[in-house]
Length: 456
Image (cartoon, rainbow, N blue to C red):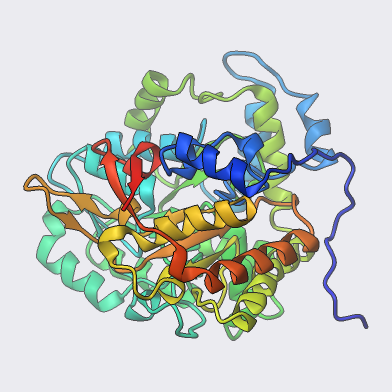
């Protein structure tokens, strides 16, 4: 049996990539104020900024798009998607949104109040921003192993149950619900074990708190459980997924990840207790509850994508892709979050730029270097994304300086990954010449999206 794991699909349509020179990229990055978010996509060779909504849809999804019912209220496409989601999640109440951060905003606005506290393994950027914008404290409680990039541990996304119970005991009156993110995007796309989900669910029930999961990458998490958790090696992915959902009271999702679509998200809830507030907020912010800011064709594509995202052949290939790049980086002496996650490889910038002070934002500097060297666009997950400038002008810094290379689904082939490995190795060899940055302009929230920088 051959050892090479091939892409479980054939390419049916292509999009040309525009090649650029180093000199051109230097000019383009300067014009973007040293912020790769501000680059035009046509000026990027490998666009690994995010896996959110950037993948390729299947022929089945494109076919389903033609069946979209664009009725304002009660569209056939809504009920088709509702049935799929109810079967997967086991939850009755479903509302669509245009993407994940909208689902977060609608739910948090309906359920939380200023001064509340929400525990999670790790809140990702939009989750944290949506909470903090409402005056809610977002607390990260990932296990200690999840903060050690080089450590091999099977479920580094697990929430620290002892710390979770301590905060439930001390701050229970402020906690409207507990959250967990699968997989843990902030910490390297690391999975959460079924045992941890089950135990956290029981802990929240003990304290009378609902359990909300952020399920952007629930299929990838299920595949990790199948591969790594004893007792699940022969369990079908759908069964693992359904068990995961059985432990929670609701979920938010950016369907732009494991639902394999370019736009969309949703909220699901087991009880109708919060539904009036959720529906009212949805109508105010997104649209009528049977379309939620989406076209009927998007609902149809999502219904198909949710099923395709649980295909085991696809998931095995998906996880192996990240593992393959990790092996190439290991050989080049480049550190990254180990073991590799499902949707991305997270380079530990401190292993490439060990002498750069954190005040010069090493992960941000590495992002710029990857673009200059090879036209690769990644995203910084470090002190620009999660640090803050305080009122007195001082900065807080993140515990890790990571560069996430997130892979759009069904888009790139092995040669793209081989090219990326070569570029990253070359950047490491030239580390002494890589310059740090300072922030010259920033907004109050989510500064990494729009901040402007200059070379140090």
